[in-house]
Length: 125
Image 1 (tube, rainbow, N blue to C red):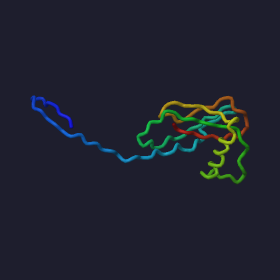
Image 2: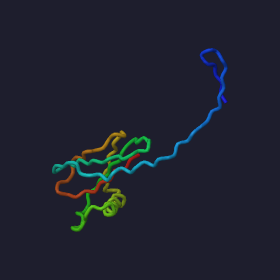
Image 3: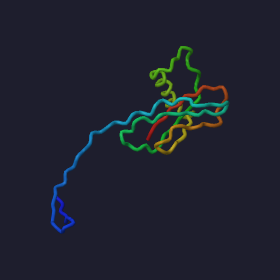
Image 4: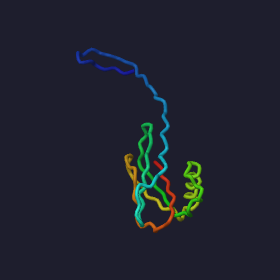
């Protein structure tokens, strides 16, 4: 219970009431895709998705060199998930770059080896 004086000097009182909104789970960051490349650079882009009102402090973008995908690879989410697991398995070979800012949506990796295959992933924090 709180009380106050209105602009005419009259005493007023009211009871606080609290309301809770329902939780909206944020969307995952989209799978990264290749925006541009040269023989030694890769520019990776992603879409952050709906945040549900949550603030994103940073994006961790990881990559590592990998073997070429099988000839029948079609890039489905399931196949991409299997490749992403390889990032966790090869921790000593995985490179990471942290990008600060909620509006960030791309990064350029330099000094890449020419004619190699890479797997990437983006995580929002």
